[in-house]
Image 1 (cartoon, rainbow, N blue to C red):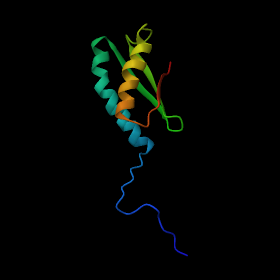
Image 2: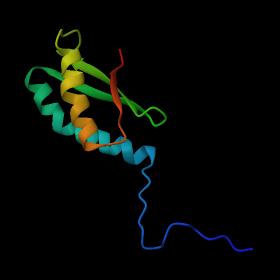
Image 3: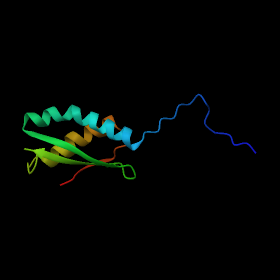
Image 4: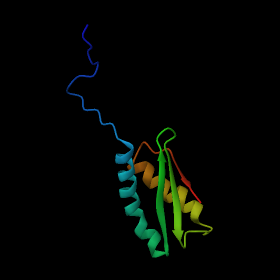
Length: 95
């Protein structure tokens, strides 16, 4: 018995590996980092959980302990990452 695919050959399905997603996350963060650096801060990519769509980041420099860091995380970084990478559902801060 022969197995047939239900997906026509003309349809391209793009499956991103964790490595591909990590690279896209780093690229998106590279567009955000200059803004953080102007205020003496930074952000480090820690991990991506594909099961939950959660990205973990760690603040650096002046961002550590800043009272505005949660707002920066949610209203800045999370919005940018979700727009650039639809697989991302949440961005959290790792301490």
